Length: 58
Image 1 (cartoon, helix red, strand yellow):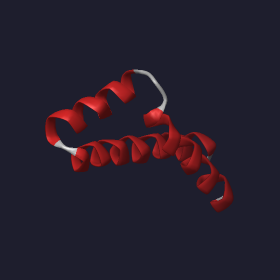
Image 2: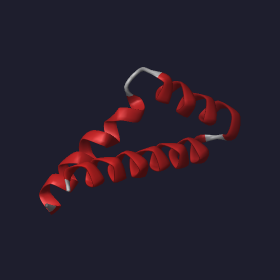
Image 3: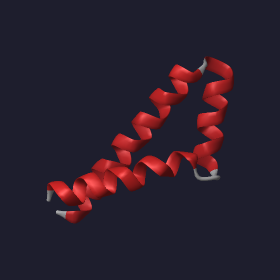
Image 4: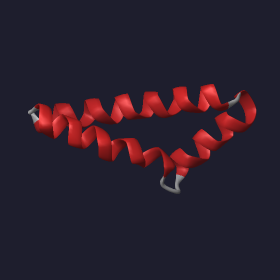
């Protein structure tokens, strides 16, 4: 279970930098509010996606 969660977290960590609406949001946050807000936005997205995967898998 822990191995699957760590693997999913690694993959989901790459999603915010893949071109798409999420990248646009992170880029906007970086330009408007700075890199710390962009990192916070990425972290929130990662946590949310991780919860979805954890709930779906089990």
